[in-house]
Image 1 (tube, rainbow, N blue to C red):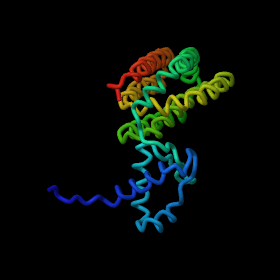
Image 2 (cartoon, rainbow, N blue to C red; image 1 turned 180 degrees about the vertical axis):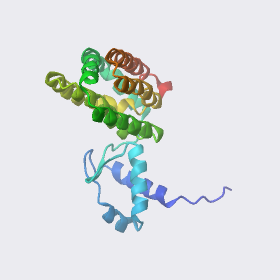
Image 3 (cartoon, rainbow, N blue to C red; image 1 turned 30 degrees about the vertical axis):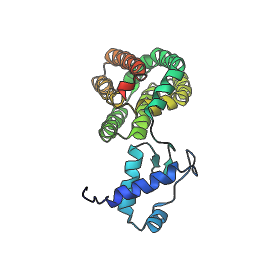
Image 4 (cartoon, one colour; image 1 turned 135 degrees about the vertical axis):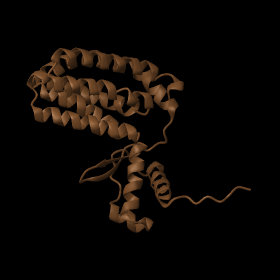
Length: 234
């Protein structure tokens, strides 16, 4: 016989909401009921609902948008075989994207360091700090969003309209890649050091170092792509 275990209220709410999300009645992008509605239906307080949502977001099932509520981010259980299959099927397309990024982002960071303001640098530091926290709690949707935010903000700071336009197209195609790659813990952790180096180049106003750090960063992304097809990486 085994001792009877009490399941914490928050975990019960997480399990309940997760079952609701994967039941088949919802689609990605659907908005979940409001906090007040969930409190009433599940007979728990707002604090419990918020903690449950935070856990579900970290697990990649929901995306919380400030002032708008919680939205379905994923409707299926995480399956590492699906992740491996996705990388195998989309490797060529992702490599194409990385080649384009390797051409424009070192230039973008060089121009950005030349043209950025102290306010821009502080914002970049904050994005880095937020990313560090997201990696610490393994919040995959947040990591993906912050990685996009970091790179796009650098391009924006270049003040080059053509680079900004090209990047906006790349971001669209990179969305699926970012949503998949950061389910692999090592890939999520591997972005912190290079992002930190790039921020340091902004602080020191060293455009050549910033460009070199970006080149090295994107090369690591390419290496992570190759490892993402390995079952032992998940």
